[in-house]
Image (cartoon, rainbow, N blue to C red):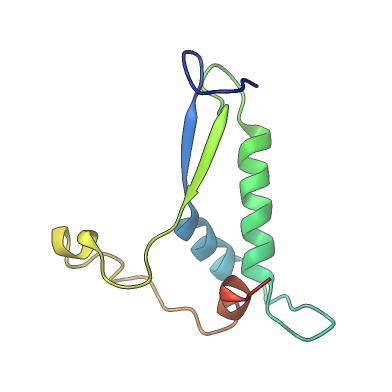
Length: 103
């Protein structure tokens, strides 16, 4: 790994919102034993990011990565494509508290 970003470096941008969405809908409910806080999507998200970085091999493997999240309200994407996220079901509240919880 290098100290900076330059020739030979590869920045991978990861769609964090898509990873959270996949983790939320693909995994069974998982709660923290101490207080029942839903953590399934967060645990799945962390595992997916870890796996993505660990399995990236070859000449285009990331030397740097950034996770990008959609803004929760309407964005420029909605202006460009009005049906953006039109078929995406809303989270049923099962994991959203863990995503927005204070540490």
